[in-house]
Length: 251
View 1 (cartoon, rainbow, N blue to C red):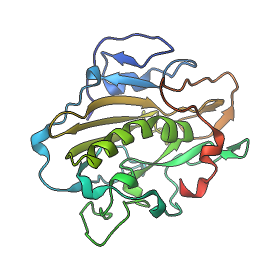
View 2 (tube, one colour):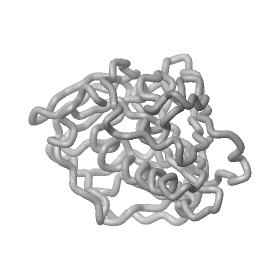
View 3 (spheres, helix red, strand yellow):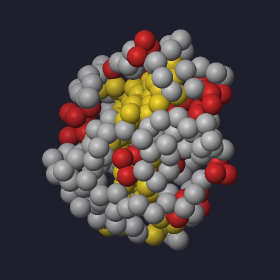
């Protein structure tokens, strides 16, 4: 589901907002130096708190090109918090997977739509299983080719917001949709939105799938080094470090 937004600015130093739909935002190529996060609908979710009924994740089937092109929606609570020590080695290669290492670090990750750290006990069918301590990690319906920067430096900002809400025993609806243009095998970006049932947690953003120093062909997922590609780190967060993504087998 592609949603509408609010006023637009093109400042390279602040999170932009857009009056366009997510699909329209994705059709605008990312411009070097601009923020990679665009607020959608004034950063307000369009999810409905009354939809939270059962602790589960609604996974969608892959499309005809084997892409995770539909939104996955998670209905989460405190018991879904999972320890990072439970992370396991990743094997599945999503569409557009062409790994490259720059300064010894991988430029792409297996991006989880619903992070394993907030889906503890959820099996690959999306159902809660009390004996399962870890979240869903190797589910093809939950993975897409995501840049290391988009995954570890941008999406985690919003996953941390969800994690914090769950830590404080709030119930949260979290929806994630990679956005693929036409028949592209690599997503141009990912649409994230979340809402707690008490409405204290509430965000709605589109994150461009970009990497500093690298340019991607989204039709195939292949890439070339481009030192002119600058992607600023959002204010108040830690800067990108290639050393943070060296454990490529975990992503």
